[in-house]
Image (cartoon, rainbow, N blue to C red; front, side, top):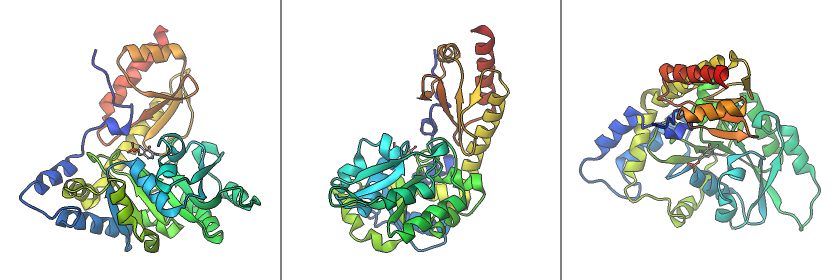
Length: 346
Ligand SMILES: *Cc1c(COP(=O)(O)O)cnc(C)c1O
């Protein structure tokens, strides 16, 4: 049986054609190594244009590297990071932020729909602590969140304000940043530096690149010596043009936005179709490119027997269904048809 990975993750999708074409164009002749080439300069300039500000840009191989190197740039070993308890940096990166920072810890907050509330951040900061404890140095949020929800402009600004008033840094894990921009219908700057974000891990792999995420420092003073940190961690590609060229295809003509809108729209359609099936419960509002749903165990077994692969992320029956730039309405219909069969069969 052919396994179907269409909804397993947005990183099961192929490469967007625009990135592929840019890669082919970059694959000609000789170019300077280690990022001193035209493609890398162009990609970084396109990021500056997208965010409408001057910023320092570093291309690395993975989102984990982007997050943990950024956080290591913000925190000393005796510092700690405030984030949601389900944050990818806390649950899925093998302690990389602690490792690269030489020991920084994390304070994990509760929060509805996978979002942290500015009051909860304030409460954490208000705790009296002495030298027995690590010091709060950075707050990190994920946009869009691990539950596919999206922080509004005002919610980000409120966290930015708390960070600013308390003199701590503000990091954003933007593994799905483009989906958030598309969902909110805002400009990139409104949910990043204008809302107080100092450093963004700008993910593009799940949005359609072959490999590579970017670390974007809006607060450029925080990027001092950062190039050394990237090199030490093995994240400066010697043939950098092949990491950066796909970004050019991704960023030119707002290609990233068109693909993100498509992925979000697919999730909306999928969520709408799921909500109409009895026994299926949506676990969160569909605000980006994910639908989280719960349905009985026997139906999951039926779907697995049909070859559908997806992750169970909450309890025994809560599934995460991801859409990507390459999701089609046709495959959504196939999935729904099989689910309806599952319901009437089991
Ligand atoms: C996928 C993802 C990352 C990056 O993961 P890598 O597998 O290291 O590229 C970071 N944050 C979130 C929320 C993610 O979903």
